[in-house]
Amino acid sequence: MSGIAPCPQNGRAGVLLLAHGAPERLEDVESYLSYVRGGRPGSPKILEEVRSRYQAIGGSSPLLRWTRAQAQALERALGIPVFFGMRNWRPFIRETMDRVRESGVERLAAIALAPQYSELSVGLYISRTEEAARDAGVGAEIRWAKSYHADPLLIEAFSERLERIWTGQKVLFTAHSLPEKILAAGDPYDRETRATAAAVAARLGVSDFDFAYQSQGFTDDRWLAPPWKPAWTVTPPPASARWRSTLSGSCATTWRSCTTSTCCSAGTRPGGGLRSCGRTL
Image 1 (cartoon, rainbow, N blue to C red):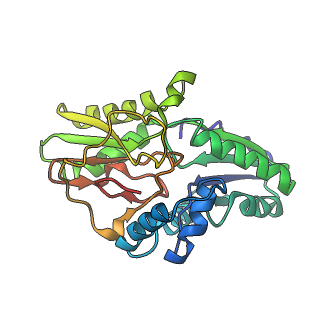
Image 2: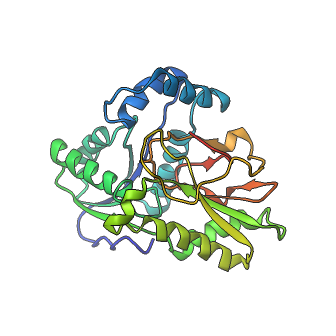
């Protein structure tokens, strides 16, 4: 991954993967939302809405399962320890940092499983990890992959997924929305998400495509535009391939590509599985 500075050969190295986190049971939804909202109480209506959506995909998210599988595969490929932690669910980043300390790792390549950078997504992973490392007494040097939105291997992977189902029809690329206020501070998220979409389209020779944001939060903030339109009719992938996130506005980016009749898996997030078409949590 081009965004990671190479670890020196001297000293023991490891990798840290970071994901948003998601409830594993319906009974966990209320506690999960409290973490997402920073301890602020949510309304019973929001709780019921979120719970019903997890119920619709089988009662849990596969995010943890996929993140663990990816960490295990990467560990086998690299031959060094690979850890993973979640920002809003178990295993929490703080718990993972205890394992990092106990392993004796001296250098850690940290990757938030969100290709595009924003202070409200990757920036939060960085601050939470640095805080957790201090609290756990981790002495390892941490090097960050802050953005890899245009990495050739990422574009290749997304393109391969889309190519499996694309037959020449118009393609809709979407990304998780964030509050519009990030633009005033020069946050690169909007241009990086659009750049990823354009790069995938260019690689496949897709000339007819659009871009939209989905998963706006239950807040009074203005959110990034254009929004995904519920009137667009799409067919989601099998339920076993989907995952859901909360409408918090702080989730990491997840990509998918939809046509007027199909939603494909070009939008997989490493460790995150697929997002179903339509308005997700």
